[in-house]
Length: 291
Image 1: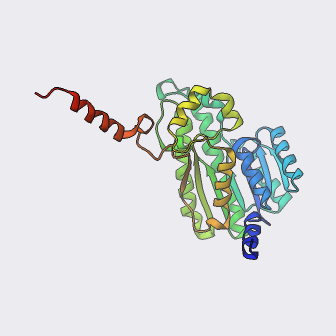
Image 2: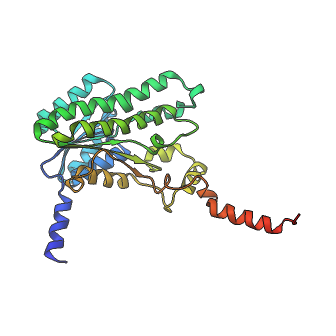
Image 3: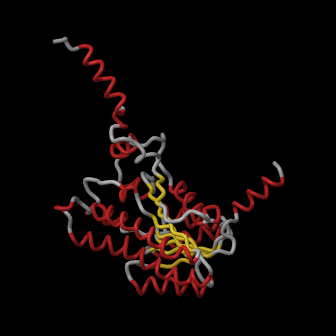
């Protein structure tokens, strides 16, 4: 291995040296994977989660790997709690350079139904966390980032925010709106050297999702992926780390899918695609009697 290759790898592994990151919903799943990825590359991380014990467990893992982290229990739907989160970050680490808005009201998704069957309380609570909470965190982070000369934000969207479904109306709407908030933020504060992108995961098998999806549903979803495996939280964390880093210094205002190709194909893909249908129709036409 050459000295140049060694140097490149060392730089890559320390992309967040001297940086402070706030990651919401970081107690488990994708958020935890993002917090660990940032810490492993030298970043100091505020692990924020509504589950304080989960946040503490994540910071313990970071500390065991010689990283620096602060655990905070917070409900991002509360404006005062979000303000306190960033005040604590300023006092403990001196400011914030990076923000990952991952917190989401996933506990509401079983009750998130089609429009006529939707409990409006589910809509309101979903928007309060997924959309308003993200906006509150962005507003707090932007002020500090401007003072520090710039920063980077990644908002955790979803493929649900890019396509219709038979349920998850509130969740999908909140993620679609998050995409536009990301584009607006990138447009309004790019001059201040603040970048903002959204990441739209597809089927990512977190512990929570594994417990919720039965094998039949998993098989059905996997049929529509182009790649032969499901996604992992670490896959998303790697993309988030790239978008936060200077490697993505000229990328902003984008929605980046990480879905194994689930949204990249025609709806007939899992049933053989249009080519299979055309071949079948040709064969049927050849077998039918001529008039």
